Image (cartoon, rainbow, N blue to C red; front, side, top):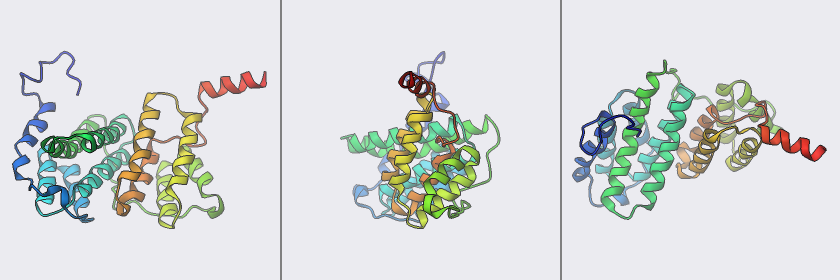
Length: 261
């Protein structure tokens, strides 16, 4: 976190750093066999509730409780990723964007850290970040009432060219686009085809670092989310992806002009 102009976090008790310290005290409550837990699709919704209304500590404690009952870390990550996607859907913009890229970064660290204690703390911190981003988003405006559970699956009108329809809808009505992505995937549509098409849009329409890092994160994390939650996760990503109706970036325009000349 950015502490520019503030006291040194190593010698101060700043609000932004407190969850990490609090989470360190929870590690002893996580069982030794935590890594061998079982997938439980009922666990993510319990996390969603703490992300919506609880504190960073409540979110971490909810994860500890699930792990203590034999729930797999994968199910906790499902909650983190999908919960972050929900916040973006409720308030599209820079805060929700960073919630998802932070989840991606924390998961990368979790997968590559060698120390078991550090891995536990990273998992709890990833949970704590979601309420922190929620509170930050509230400082920028109200949050929508839509949730993961209220997201509807609606089939694209043109079944023979669903991807073209979805990419067009992203530029016009992101909520409808999310519903059509969910419907497309629920009906057996290939998520990787949609990812490939979204990446092509990024090459044409991306304009700054946030476009690229967000797309890289969420399209990568599609493969890190369990099958029970993967479709909703990818559907909610459209709230910051580029659609076919967005203008091309300057590089594309200059390149085409040079080739035509």
